[in-house]
Image 1 (cartoon, chains in turn brown, blue):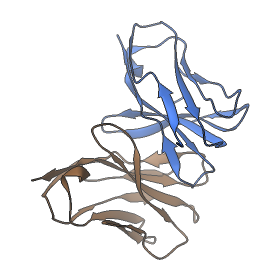
Image 2: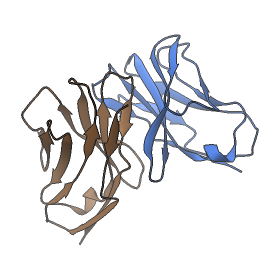
Image 3: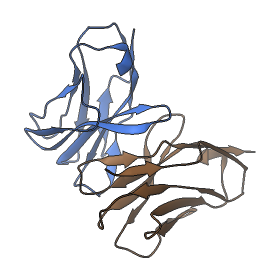
Image 4: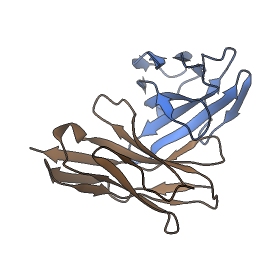
Length: 113
Length: 112
């Protein structure tokens, strides 16, 4: 069974700094998808970024980028020029052959003014 | 607007009183799923559906039922709720596995 591990329960940085959230996963599949979701206090689940495992190029979305290391099964999220609105819970998720997303435990990120 | 609509957003109920949480999507998605979110555990899948009349168990199906009589609707039924089902519930839909998932706004359920 697939597992996703987020080893940082909480993180805190100053506004405008860069922060990296860690995620590792375990799978024997070769074709899969990886996601980062943001959950602000409104509790809405918002897709931040998506990576297809067969693509070597790391996905980017504006200030958000990933470092995808397939061999190491690592999928970290980098947030550049962090903003107060980035304060949220962040979930890493794996989507493979099984009909579900497997989520990590979450990292609570606080951006301080 | 493309969306997944969940109702209610908040619900407090008593042990054993049957309840239904509704979920509806307007994107003609074939895949729909229910998750529960608990502190320190992330989101875990309860049930999913690949299409009308096709449903299957996820990782934590005990105490829950679902149905998919229409493509757009995927209600979650708790026939006899217990306090350990107190949680935050999300419905999600997708065109297919691996594509963008759209989540509902969540239902905070408290069973006393």
